[in-house]
Image (tube, rainbow over all chains, first blue to last red; front, top):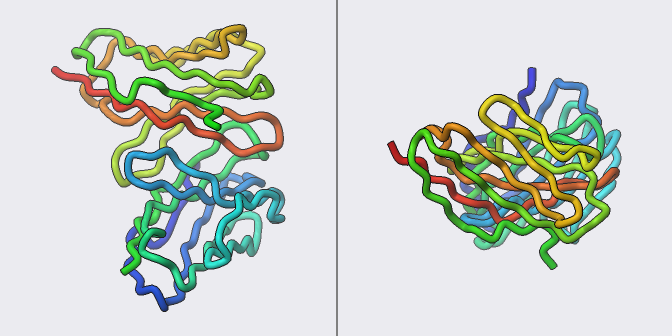
Length: 112
Length: 111
């Protein structure tokens, strides 16, 4: 099983809403990542969890709040987003903090 | 400062011919290099990787070459197929860090 599952696949939210993106992997990977990708741009790293501890936060605004409840799950809590936050949000995991990362299909987020 | 560079935004190749995608990097501490393939509105799919201790890695139609002195790597696809049409991202990292991606090259394979 080399699958990283992200839900929902699509999300439309207003600027005052609170929503959460979810990510799950059962490969026993101990590093999990959130990336953001805008059209025609490469994925940009947002957060990294290693052994369920936040190890990298790439100066992401506080309206994005990550959470790693256990080694298989990764959440991204969203609150008071702006229209420019609309993007494809990608979750990934890897055995350790380096090497091959496997990506989920992404959540297409639209902020209205 | 872009640490991973893909200077060709696009590449067009005929079916059956070789596709060569190029990538340059600036950080000499990178020790692992990867290629990902991406379709629109989907997550990147891992294709092939190479460690800095090697200069070539092959997997079926895909071969990655690494030239450390030139800080350059390339992905060769032989023979190219229409289904290979996608955006290809080069990525790199070093121990303890997350992947850094290049801007991608859009490959179009015509039949």
